[in-house]
Amino acid sequence: MRVSPSQLRTWKECQQAWHYSYVEGLKLKKSSKYFDIGTYTHELLHVMYQTMKAMGWKPGSDNMIDMMQSRIKADMESLDLDNIDVMSIVWPLVTKYVSFQSSQIDKGITVLGIEHEVRQELDNGLIIHGFIDLVYRDSAGRIRIRDHKTSGQKNSWNPNKVKMNEQLLLYALAVGLEFGEPVLDVEISFVNTYPYKNKQPSSDELFKLFRHTHNEQAINSYRKNLQRMHDQMLEGNIMRNYSESCGSCRFFDLCYLETRGLNADNTRAAMYQKIERD
Image 1 (cartoon, rainbow, N blue to C red):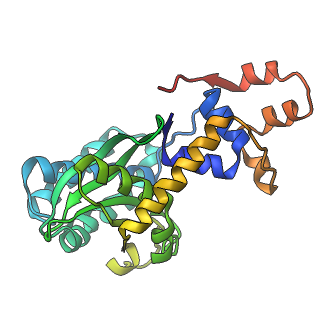
Image 2: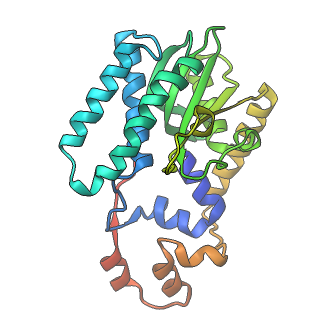
């Protein structure tokens, strides 16, 4: 069975939702994808590191800044007027990230992968699968993994959340297996996308880098816990974890009917489509 960070999170939140999504392969028919500050900022950061890797340009260099501004300008010309406000925020934000933040945190790094796909098999058919925003080797030769996070709430992340973040633990385990060496250093690069008004925010208000170094014991312990969860998934004994948040679940209507033994065929056909998962 293939597991991903989002799958493990769903399992822990509600095993019934996990069953609908990952066993039955259901998803809402309507798309939730839209253009926003966070999504576009995240995309541009990938472009920046891809260029850094391909061209060998130094972090924060004039070439990098010019390239990113040209990319944003070209995107602006193709957007609807409704998205101009988004671009007016993203332009200075990304420019400042390239010129200041990247020049500080990316000195001497060697980029190994951007949106790096990992697919590593453990025991009993358990496959770790996911995409990592950035994998790199630092100036001391250690492999580090970084996830880019954007939010309009400046206190969304802190060092303790990075330490306990399961997604980063999963990726550290997988990348260590892929490269054949322990990967213990994980980090969150946080970008505050809150639209400041009537002021020019400082770089410290806009950007934070939260780092944690796991030990090998923590990685090995997580591997054992992961295997136990995987075994529980295979057993197929699904528990419905009712909570106050059920009303916002994408499977609420379907689960509500089926829990009461009612026919949910019409709801299933009208609201959901089936996707194939490999």
